[in-house]
Length: 232
DNA sequence: CCCGTAACGATTGACGTTGT
DNA sequence: ACAACGTCAATCGTTACGGG
Image (cartoon, rainbow, N blue to C red; front, top):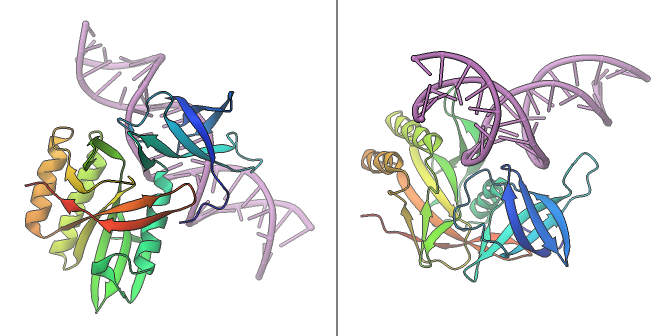
């Protein structure tokens, strides 16, 4: 996923009211849209280096969008809207081994009336539902973690993926780790016990879990490397 | 019939209000 | 006093609808 225009570098001042961040660019303070509705635990330190994009659409109140934050000498992509795009490109470019040379990739496919999953992939006459989760948390420099706050939606999705298994689909959760240098991934069970419980149940039922790390660069973000999931 | 625009849902934590 | 609930924030993608 290439950014269409060069990103602008600045320093983070604060994030507030869910969608706002104040950023210092060469001693001018601007307000940028924060395209990540999560808690962004650990990412919001004052004076962190950030990269933002500019969009001159007259309908936008905020012309800037926060894209990347530098934390502990590591780059983190925070625009969750890009996650499915990055994964779509990864699937199309055969960067995800399991789904290499798939016959079709369909985004946003309804499983039932209430739930749609991010992708339905068909390969060798087998259908796979894939639910993508964007990951930006790392409390330890070696290990990315999900979730960064209690996620009842996440738990609901796991339960529905279990249903999909029972209806004869294969189902996958793909943790897209938008953190530049990281080796492992795990479920943060201390943050959301219920999610961890549902993860174990889903795994037992046959839901497959994958974690991939991105290359984060102010020019582009792409899928780079499969990570080891180290929950026991 | 087509294009442009308006409306709407999804995203999730913070905060204000209401109810017990 | 606190818990539960509803609303709000900006953007984007999709859908619905109007005028020409």
